[in-house]
Image 1 (cartoon, rainbow, N blue to C red):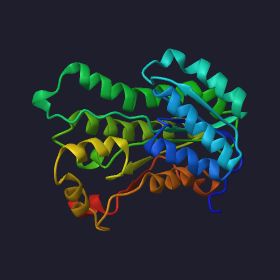
Image 2: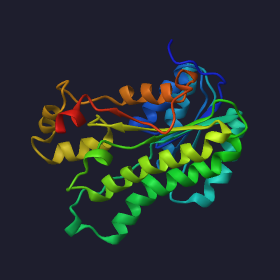
Image 3: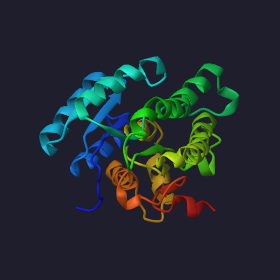
Length: 256
């Protein structure tokens, strides 16, 4: 198995009940990493955590949490620490999208997207700092998007939030390097996640349009992002920080 995981500290994964969050938690557990799954869908997060514990034999826990409610972070971190042991990683995969152009965008929706995708990322990192600073090899991974690079006129709030996540990643990496904490981001392309399913179902031909943009001629799978998350949290990535890794099957190069 590739992906050295020493020390095998626990990892908090937001949005862990489905999609990239679930795939990341499974990829980490596969190499012995304990995982805490936080998601607004408490029942589904608990079910995924139970399945992971049974399949991979690692400690898991789950919590129902809206990541906009930062006042609850300390209690859930304490619960995760009790269940998993030392915590040495964070994956911020929780994300929302509001695909409307700027002339139809309302302030409430803008705030909602920015709060979940960007604000929570930074505040989660801050809340976990005492734990991350206590262990050699601690690392953070934020899930951004190719929209952070290319932009998207049909989804400006999402694009802005993910571009902000990239800037926050570089800033966190710079500020936390003195503590030995690495911070990186991943920019997925078109991945078969619940966030992609709904628009594909409602817009005929959309999936085909996504596929045409990929040099590899297909959409990606959540597991293909999860494996990159695992790598960035591992000792194999010990000299990588302040970077964003594009995992999109060649979409960004094809658009340049």
